Amino acid sequence: MKNAQISALLAVLLGLSASAFAQTPGVDLKGTVGYVIDQRGYVAKNSTGLCWRTGYWTPAMAIEECDPDLVKKPEPVKVAAPAVVPPPKPAAEKITLAADTLFDFDKADLRPAGKEALDDLTTKIKDIKLEVITAVGHADRIGKDAYNQKLSERRAASVKSYLVSKGIEDNRVFAEGRGETQPVTGDKCGKSVVKSKKLIECLQPDRRVAIEVIGTK
Image 1: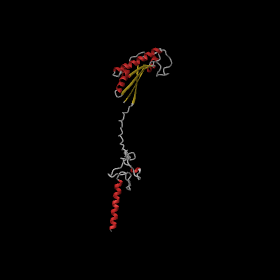
Image 2: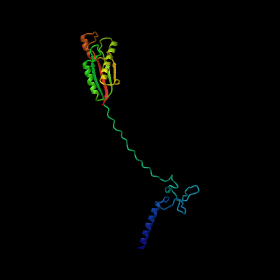
Image 3: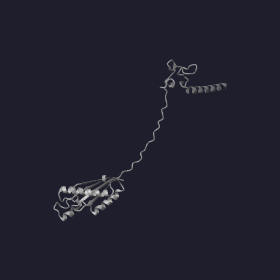
């Protein structure tokens, strides 16, 4: 009975010893010492400050005091920076509004119906972020090319002036003339260029200013 108790006690003491060694720097699990220890219990060092290693030393026994390069240091925990989510950009919906203002023969003054069309257009513009308005003037084929070019420019300028008078910024409206080069009547009125009441009435759609408004909601 006593022998059994002694054996159990020795086992406990050996376990405690191994545990103490395992927690001691420079000592492995078997209690093997990797560095020479002086009488004070410190690691012995030479004149240059280097630690004396025992013949049992292995890299696994390295301690910070003697072999800092061999001591495994815990890697710093990387904390991921919170992702910055940019606020969603407002969707830009490009819209185009088109309208025509028609003019009397050989005139650049807006008709009442043309003013109504522009008034309606300026009302719709209030609901969008305006980018640009283009006003392209046109003329019918009656008359000389150079004259019709000037007439189409005057018609476009007339539309621009009216829009500006309604509060549209001057630099937002671009006016130009295309003369008689872009008729919408095609061959509907024949090929005659002789001025007649019938031809003047037939070519009425060509005497116009095409307006385009571009903006975003």
